[in-house]
Image (cartoon, rainbow, N blue to C red):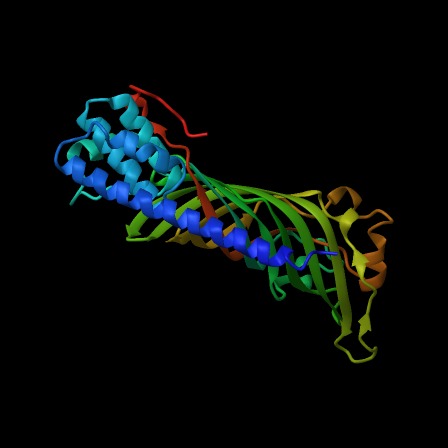
Length: 359
């Protein structure tokens, strides 16, 4: 049984702890104010000793950043470049998105800051999107002639995708983007089988897509950037369904709805697409919210021609009196993603007097 004195004792311990922490922070704030006055007076010798213990433990984040900035200024004033760089690296580790203020920062501080790579190296995020399929007929193989068959492919609702987005920043404008995702496509096909019979079918396909894009920021306004991109996509086929209805235009027979057919063995194991698009991204805290519109052009035939007339394919022929065509799947997609930026601060290649990398 917990003693009736245990809870009051724990509360007392917490109160004392908060009180001690609060007093330590207050003492460190006083030291920071005193150190700033000493710096303004040019008396810099004691400032590192005053601030170092509080930097280790005692400052909140805002005051710690201010103290590290002051230490950097002190070491610059003292011509101790090695320690100035070390202090600035600690500052950037504490606040990776720290920016200088030309109105108050000495030119030496700004010059030292600019000698470091302070831009994010890469970002990692999650992406969600929808797509509308636009299948492209390559060659008809219906039971009727091409003119009579007149196959028509259209979107059927929307497909969806979700995945991971990683962008490697080559510089301030160019990115290389990897965006593996689980993607579904759906479309509708209408084809004349005979002079009096039409097949209406819906097909869904699921892929794991492995895209790679290169993007270029062509316009930037404050926190909003606009970019164009080009890329290629390799899709690995997972599964698919084919559902259709045979409609008789002479009204002599009722419409026939066939059974659902699994298409895994009837489709090629991959889909290759070229991609082009535009997008925008809005900086939000240490990340960005990206919006993309892409046109993806299907390149290869998704029909597995080796089994067109094999028994596995006869189910479509017997159910719908049709033979599948050669086609590829193009689509338009819209996606949105949130991406978190990662930094590795170090001296730029032309400024390696004291190369150091934050672990």
